[in-house]
Amino acid sequence: MSQAKLKICILGTAYPFKGGIAAFNERMARELISQGHEVEIITFTLQYPSYFYPGKSQFSDEEPPPDLEISQTLNSVNPLSWWKTGRKVASGQYDLIISKFWIPVIGMGLGSSIRMGKKKYKTTAISIIDNIIPHESRPGDGFFRKVFMNSIDGVLTMSQSVAEDTRQLFPETPVSFYPHPIYDIYGSRINKSDAIEHLKLPSGKKFILFFGYIRDYKGLDWLLQSFSMVKDEIEDIDILVAGEYYTDGSKYIDLIKKLDIESRVHMHTDFIPGEKVHQYFSACDLVAQTYKSATQSGISQIAIHFELPMLSTKVGGLAETVEEGTNGILVNPDLESISKGMVKYFQNPSTYYQEVGCKEIKKKYSWSSFIHELLDLYHKIKQ
Image (cartoon, rainbow, N blue to C red; front, side, top):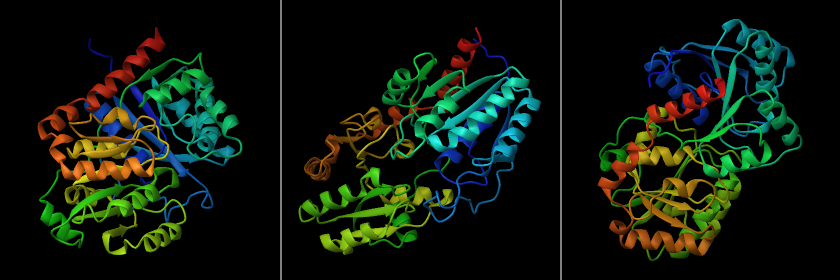
């Protein structure tokens, strides 16, 4: 059934901000535009106060995307900007407002802006929810979350666990589920030796890649400790860490020294710009997601795009993206299981990785299918 063309506002993170949520929103906008919809992105002037942001900079060093209409009005902590954004949302007369929700503190500004906009123009608001329960709790989470959820008409989650949590917390809100689509914006794999040369890594090695913002719940310490337990069994394997610290980095440096694995761990802890992402995934042989807790992970979708195997802990929605025997290995969230998983994989990788199967898995996570599910939810709400 063909869908009517819609006027859509994506309210949330986009350029000049960096990171996975900005990349997601911009890729979603392009997919909607390719399907004939009219799309505008309204993003932040201030996403987080500087004291709240643990990284080096919230802002991208790249050029602005020439193919997207992006305006900045929303300050997450300034109520006057919420009123201004609400007026802008109302004046746009959008059929649909789409907003990502990943941390409660941004819910106040987003929710207030959406609610103000809806008062002046009848529209439908759908949230794509990454986490309804935050990984790291803070005072006021429940209140901020409620303000946001009271402004929207429906929810699309990208993991079954988040869908279940959302239904329990907000049983009156329509909830749909569709897996996180692949991140296909980072180009193609290059020759491994070329990638290793670009990254100045030692030749003749295999690499386990830990990629993305380094936050405590993602279990980099578990990966390092597990690796140290079996380093002599997998002598030709090193760890490659690529991503900016979102926590105190010194504890990881101290742990590497304590475990005596400094020569086997390569730390690239600046923000990885989009044009270099393919180098890291081209250099690696296994993508590690040794999370202590999780919902879904965009890193899984980058690995699937590059058709690489994963070692993932069985937490949250991570297991939903790994078909053991085809694109990786699943392990329990403890040091012994992770270390045994490394050894099992590298002793017999063909048991856990099938190139043809990875290509088939990749087809399941298309952006066109994701948008179809999103707009199907919109039409159900409108009925």
